[in-house]
Amino acid sequence: MNRPLTSESIATTQSKSRTRAAFTNHDLSQPFTVWTRWRPALGQSKLGRVYCIIIDAKGRDWNELLVENGLARIYGTKTPLPDGRDSAAYVAHLKGIEAKAKREGDCGQGRG
Image (cartoon, rainbow, N blue to C red):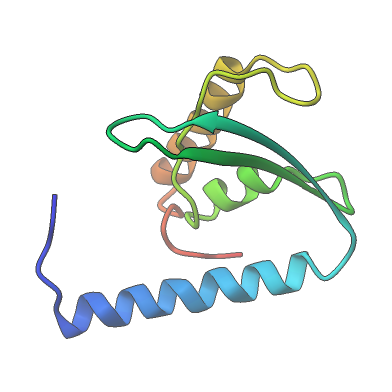
């Protein structure tokens, strides 16, 4: 659904972008590991997509952290994960984190 741009929606987008940048700069200032997987894109695109899982120096999964803090949306694909987990179970796990954040009113607040 497309929404008209307003000064309020632009300001909200800019604020969320600054929150995401601060969150990322702070926590990724230490070493981290990136696992990537290329998959064909869904829909009309003929291009592929690179999906990734980022694990920080403390062993935290960044997909979980970003979703928990309302800074990412969940888009999954069926592919074996680098650590052997089932991708459908992983996406379901992320959706559980997202649902909990929404129930607690944190999703989208960028509290990280």
